[in-house]
Length: 316
Image 1 (cartoon, rainbow, N blue to C red):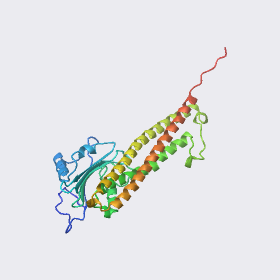
Image 2: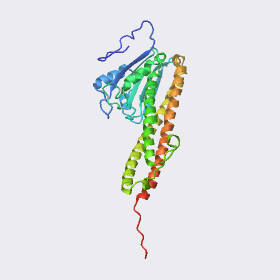
Image 3: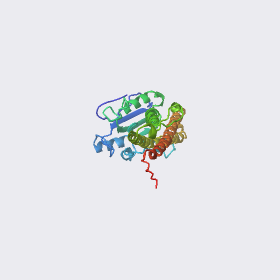
């Protein structure tokens, strides 16, 4: 069930008999870059945070730029069974991929996860990167619809956020960022294996007039330096993705200690392993691009002395 308009508390799950589980998600666009904020009154947010049983540091966590994930598993003191999972996940911030986070609680008695998805460009009115035709919340909604059997699983919301983040990161790093590096490499005249294996090398210092070579080299230096800095940021983002997937696997292992939380665990573990492998693959690619970029910068450093005026010699 979906509902638009002003916020209303959930009076009924709309089903007869025991709850079958599900998701209740409030999607809020980020109002300011810093601090993290919403276009709602503070009292309204605090009421939602209480009603949704969200972690107390939800708003503070949404302001994190490097990415984080944290959880609390509450249990019944009388019998040790789990009662509620509370969790915050703030994605590592990168404009080309996304700047969003999720805070939620999962009730093990009802099987319902209730939370807030917050970020820049998560709705159609946001400021998402122009590369993406559909805003983040709509893309995540499609991912959720594809796994109906997991709607009652406590980790579905964070897994969906991670899957979306990894899909965007994989496309941007594998296709766009990699192609930008390749283009600069081709202009530098360096050679590599793969698609540049038979590329004709070019000596910038000798193939072009000195003035043109200096201008060309300066432009390539700026372009390469920008790509390396961009890549370093993506390496940090990839590190967060890998650590976050490890955290989700640890939570699933913790949940599997309780029979009450085991439903769908096999499917969820398979999904986590797949996404963890994807995160590791993106991480290897970014690290490789960083090393290649640094090697290309060494070529630039070796070329610079060749363009410097040679001292004149005098015969005494």
